[in-house]
Figure 1 (cartoon, rainbow, N blue to C red):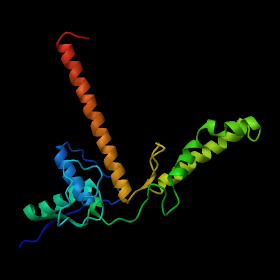
Figure 2 (figure 1 turned 180 degrees about the vertical axis):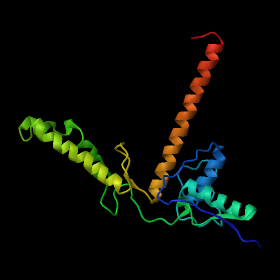
Figure 3 (figure 1 turned 30 degrees about the horizontal axis):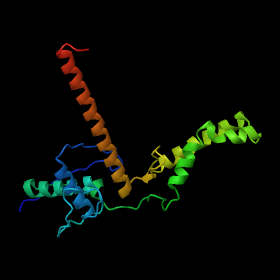
Figure 4 (figure 1 turned 60 degrees about the vertical axis):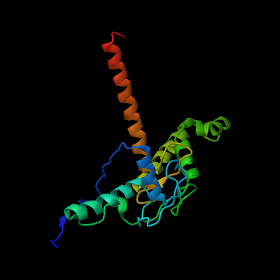
Length: 206
């Protein structure tokens, strides 16, 4: 057997690219089924639990797709990368819906955002505890705290019901997948609206 073609994966700290795919619902559900080994509550079409699930360290749809892509390219073309891509690399740890090993919880994240709003200090200003000039440095400190967490690799969603997620964790992978899916839906809606408008213009409507 000939030696495999080894491709360099590049700088591990470089920004990752995103791929948005449009597939049939059954395809998406099979991928989700494999990622969760049949334990997802989102499955409607393919709810079976199968034998011989692959061992993939990250429970994400992207990890499943990349696992089989790498396997297929190796078998068909004898091509591989010089190290495992991020999506199929070992999980280093991460956050949960209520907190994290590093202490950044959903409640703490929401507090940071709340302290960036003047309304957070309204009662203290009315009681005389703070003046408006006292509050400005407190607001600035809250923004700086947010930046500190982000520089440490955390994503802080602005939605109150979303927990913070750390790069390298399964929750981060899922968050990025959800964001890509949301953007894909937005783009699809924009394209549908543009198509409808073009049809109306062609038909002589405003």
